[in-house]
Length: 176
Figure 1: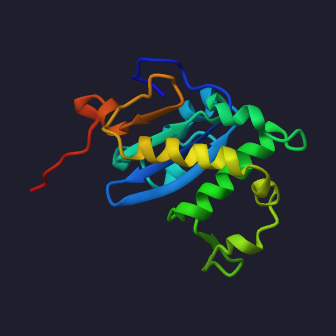
Figure 2: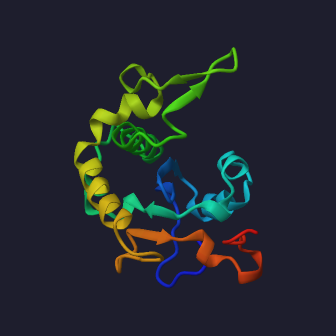
């Protein structure tokens, strides 16, 4: 993401988007350099179209392949499946608003039943326990850190999108 010192976030990452009142969305990508650039402008992603980046409080990004535990993934799981499994485990653990419900064909909403999921991530989730524990620790450090923080090793980063906007682009804070 723009506006940071330290190593660029590239390759596989998991990320979360917060509003001031809580975690909104958890996702993953195998192409951080593209997804993190496109995410706030709604390019190839629905989140910015529904919740504009100007109201995002923070974005946390964890480059999980940089964790030592990533070197110990079983040979039966490829990095893409590991990323999906981490996304699934984070969503099931944190239950972010946008990930916790799905649209029905009738136009209503239904809660996601994490235990019944047959997704690639759900099927691989049991093979990444050690890596998930390490991602949880990194996630918790990042999620509780100050705005625009970066871990020295480049494993995680926090961005406050509103801080990156020019003053004239920010939403008014008080309205008549």
